[in-house]
Amino acid sequence: MIAGFTLSLISIIRNDSLQTLGPFLLANQSRVPKWWQMIFLCTVSVVVLMLGWSVNGGDPAWGRLNVPGHVFTQPPIFTWVYLIPPLAMLLLTQWGAPLSTSFLVLSTFEFKNSSSLIQISLFGYLIAFLISILLYGLGLWVFERWIFNTNQSNHSVGTVWLITQWLATAFLWAIWLVQDLANVFVFLPRQLELLPMLMCTVLLCLGLCWLMSVGGGPIQGVLRTKTNASDLRSATAIDLLFGSCLVGSALLTSFPLSTTWMFIGLLGGRESALRFHSHRSSQPFALKDGGHWSEVLFADLSKASIAMIVSILIASGLQPLL
Image (tube, rainbow, N blue to C red; front, side, top):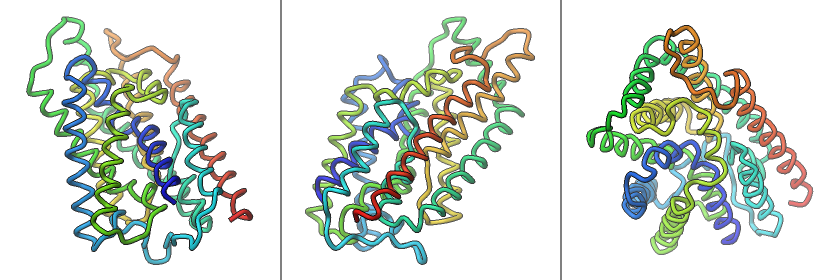
């Protein structure tokens, strides 16, 4: 149980750094000392974890493992089989796939809930894609073109944008923790005493510090093919938009969903709109890395789809062993 929790925590932090901390890590690279970033994110994490634990009567997962009709029960006995999902996540993350940890971990515990996980997650991808392509297509592309022009002129980014980006990251990281803590705490009892909860919180903070020390890992490559993704101002807009989508999904349902699919949907809609307007513009401003916008979109979708299929196959294959 403890080994499964630890491996799951490490693999989830490393994989989901793309969607939550990816823009933050890219935008603050060589800008702010890493130890300041560590203190900031660990502080947000401690507040969210301990607040959820106290408000929900000792439940560390914000109640997302006990949704009526979709309960994820804790096994009476843990075996080595439960270590396979987090180990598979580590391997898929090393490959650079935007993996949904919900599909692999939660489906292993309650495979009957896998169809609901897939349906809600794909719906989340579609909604995020449509919201993003509308917002960037109708107006935010002007903002991104302005960012491109100021970067071409070597204008420095003010401190106000740095502060705004950190606040946006805190907002996104907090709501992401509320959504995805279920993927980690599914290995532990549904009610924790204070000392075990403090130990879990410390372990999460250590994982965050390690993540920032290595710069996010191979999965950061997904962001490097996106326009202005390393700019503080663009990162702020991405964080706020993604955080708002997560808040909306949390209000609609308390059932866990794949935040990874929602994030690649947001990036796909954003990049499609920006490359469309850049093509029409007399001064192209969109990034050309990765080829045509459809190739970039397909590359993200294909890796995420392969990771989803592998996850479901693993979760299904483990059921007889469980």
